[in-house]
Length: 593
Image (cartoon, rainbow, N blue to C red):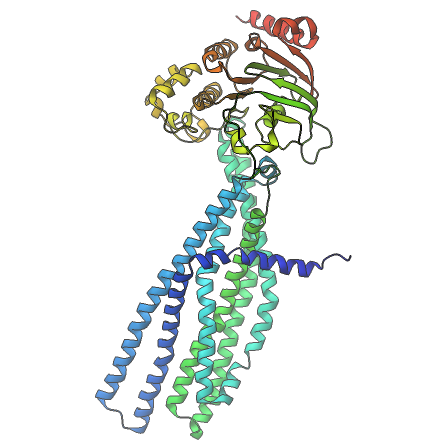
């Protein structure tokens, strides 16, 4: 079969993108109905103003006008103006309010969806891109669904109604007045595609700016340490210049569209002044009719002038909505089994059977034919950098998918269990510690916000961080800054460990999570954790042998394989790599002053 026509595919995608908004229009249908009813009220009142002006002008022309009559007409116009003001407030409150609620709901949906995606997605998309989506792009959608929607509906209603009144006054003059409009329609269609393309480039450049600013601020200490302030400023300046250039290209299209809209509108006015004036002189229409016709033409001029602005808003909104839709279309490679079962309680027995794993896009396996039975107790894992230790932890923690029959929890195939059940049974301390710009108490109780003070202090002592915290001016209520910038690397790791211990879960994974503390402190922590590890499964990945000497079992990994396993004493005899590392580390420790 022939490939799908790209144009047809694009049209289907555009319809799918617009359909993203349908549930929100339905959800806020009553609000929108009230808002648009008020908008129609504004248009209705505005359309009657020229009729009263015509009446006054005709009376003045005939010489039959009286002060009382003119005052009465002015009173009617004042009432119409009051009705316009009230209705205008109502439609702004309801419709602009709707656009803000839509923005909020879309932002909530986008964030909720992002939280379902896995590591592969975040390796392909930068934080700056995602921040741009939740700020700039959502703002563009909000404007399109607020003022853009109002202006377009208002333009259609006013155009139809004004044309109807103009035709009623004089059909031929109406035809002359609208003669220039096809020119505007052709130009608008030609320029709208360019608006879409150039706005997309503006948004992409904004993503780069946002990501650069974020990465610079989060690595500010490194930037200063390498005296890169000036180079970073220059790079940011070049990116800002590119952003300006992209905006100028967009403004060029807008700069063409808006003046042409005004030119067409004023051309219509010129034609009406010439031909309408002639008809008035000849007595074919009255002076009142001529004034009313001009008033209706001014009402028609606004839609013509608004075409450029509305087109710009809709193109920006459509571009941004398309970008949001593409993110919402992303699916995690690891998804939850809706019909999956649960383990209650989890005993921490984990089995891997001939498990091999390669990262997406890579052919070389990171784990190669791993078979392993993990039981409650302390399991140590050691090996060279890049041997697959962290990948093994990630697989066990269900951060990457595995084939059926390769990974079992308590005798159950992990793919038959829900993600929440497996992950909810694990307390994970990763290599890269993540802390929030909050208090120490908040960071420790992240997974258990209702923990008591005694519980928090208990796990802090077990992680050998309690004394450090107490030495701070505000203790556990000390705010630690962006990513824990006020703490040392070892302190950050011990905070993360205390957080994991507080969860009191059956499986604890420490993926080289104590690398920044000295060997004695690491050994002390492992020993103090003995009470927590009783009846639990603890997997401790380390580059040091000393903290693992008391482990129930130690794995030695190399090139994605388990090359040796057993207790410390056994490995000293059976594994030359393990014995060499232990000898080197103990000798190095002995040489320290």
